[in-house]
Image (cartoon, rainbow, N blue to C red; front, top):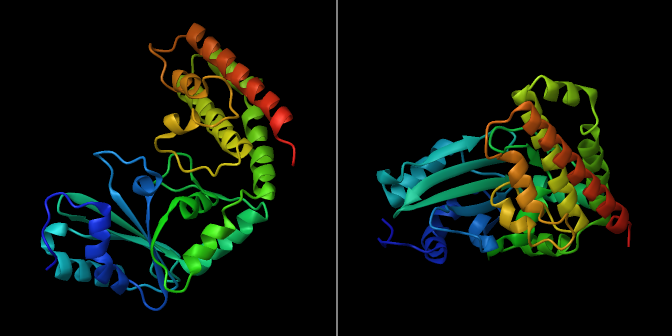
Length: 290
């Protein structure tokens, strides 16, 4: 049984958990701390994200058994993911009041994703655990910010070097795809007619689509990898190239203070159009290849 500690830190947890985490893998591996602790944005509610990279891992049931044997049954481990033709999966458990989420990812898959993104090939997978889908280039954000714990073959260090400079083909692909998505709706007949009907469900979906597209554009303009949807408000305001008070305007559009009437929906539409126009101007001014 591992040492008991009242409030373990991520560094302590990694020292304690490394012998266990190594057993999750079969063959070469790499281990890193990711998520909010790697980014320095953690708070009292944050879990500890562990990234584990390998080409082959033990089954979820085997991993659960290893956790219970090492940490005890109170850890209540759970696993997820595909085990046949392993691409990714997870083993999550609790330890001394901390939630530990271990994300296992196929080394070859990550390698291929980095190579594709550097060529400007972007993909979006609609999955339940992200609000707007999982974008393949989030992998590059994960690699860039992760803190390497063990890298016996130097693979993780090489990846970090590969993503240290934002790829221009990726930037241009994101600008093209998501600016087109953002400009599709503002003058669309169906959006305008839905406003007049006060069709709030339909219009709210449109607003979210447009705003999320603009967020993607903003990160690309700044040559910063999109980090995922959590805690975006504080991150957006730190980006140099952005519409004025960008985060405030987004939150006002998404969370109006009162129930939306037709007049409020018209105002929302007008503000959304203005935001799209502002972003178009920024792309004209800053979106050229350097």
